[in-house]
Length: 417
RNA sequence: GGUCCUGUGGAGCAGUUGGAGUGCUCGCCGCCCUGUCAAGGCGGAGGUCGCGGGUUCAAGUCCCGUCAGGACCGCCA
Image (tube, rainbow, N blue to C red; front, side, top):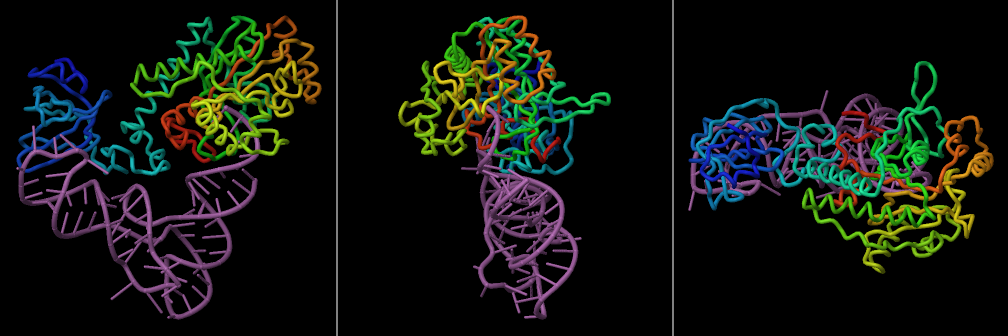
């Protein structure tokens, strides 16, 4: 007998079928008991007239052969009757928290300590499916625009890419580092394929224990050649985010907010004014980002807002200055519901400009030889972005903490499970 | 790295000027029960109040230390 999923029951009225999954909940009454089985698709109700026939406890894995019986009293209009139940895997220990509630009541640390169990909960599981759909939309949209997927090394020699701290490794007796970004490599690959993207982990050794930080997170990177300026990058990013949200809705039915074809954009100087920040601030503080998010919703009806032209002095050395205002970057951040989820921009592309920028930063050129070679041998004007997947998904579904949308989050205090 | 907050049966919480391990919602076990929907009713078990020290006649409560966790900031996606 072929196994079917819980959601397919309605299509098999009066047939004998096999459903398999986890014991979600048991409700025992005087003359009848209900066994709720949870599988990948959803829940199925099994009706038992002999309570003794049911010995399995919650989260045990069972196989149920029974007859699909339409019944107006049953959830979704169908239930399984006259079942024969086989227990694949019996659970004989108490569960650390209740799994059958509509929402998990355990605190996040408790959930994370028991991730293998907590992630089974429909609410946690749904977030992972939404995340997967967003990534699928990312890939589909970029591939439709001539981008090629690449895989860059996560073990790297140089720790000097930007100001962020890196994790050091013992690489056969010499130091190596976990990559904090695929930045250098995706730029090199623009010289090969013109348009590239990568979905992969990045590592940040920042002791930042907040609701929006992880020490390992998934970066959705893209980089494209032959651009006229950062506005080309901005347009492609807007298209990509729209494609991601469309795929989330397509696959999961989750209602995503509209992505405006022209996301409102404000210059950094104007952003400071809107946020009520001092004019000499070098960056936007989280409170300022929240204020800008509210402003975009209020003034433009948009959940998104671009902030362009951050001061060059706070940006990494490969940042291309705005041709009209060289003290500001030809780049931008994307804020989604008041949180920075993307950093993007145009990069330098001439060898001499890199030599000057690295020298000005006091960096030894020799450490960047493999990187600088690309520019010595000719690179087009280019730019790109990095989306923080967990931040985007957390904001999308209203999760207060990025750990809620990460299966096994890594933070300064947690390396397991 | 900084500031602040919290540790009380399995989960989530309350516990007042210091006065008996007291209480709430749920889970668990037992019994009852008109087909339940986060079922409902009755009863029961389950505790080194994170740990160590101090003050006091008396500490879950006040003080010091320590461990664990959390929120925010800096920084960043």
